[in-house]
Image 1: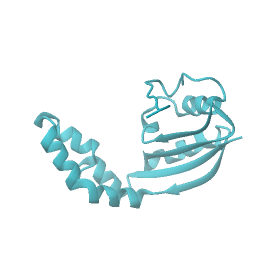
Image 2: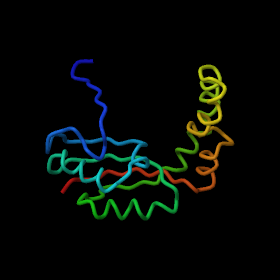
Image 3: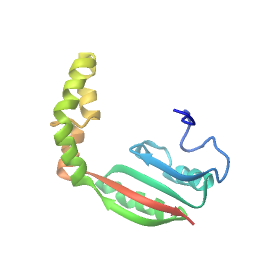
Length: 145
């Protein structure tokens, strides 16, 4: 598509000029970052004044307070926060058979277990963590002040 580009980079050291974007969307990756604070600082740097960060990700239930603390100290204003764990779990249950088939049809058998956990298939540790509340999935709309 015209003007569509993919760039590999480091979320804790974004390769963009200051104030380059109006909106940044971050879905299901921030739980992997070494430093949420560095990521948020980089997002603040590359967002224009009054720009928005749309963040959706999961965390272990006992790590939510750390995430909330990082957000509170980041200089972003939380415009909206939703716990969408129930909806995500319902989607995992609904999409599970399709995901299982894709894994069985396209992945080497040695990878089935790890991919099943990654895809949160029924019976996997990830699935059970969502089912029991050990994982929670949150979405935020954040404003750069």
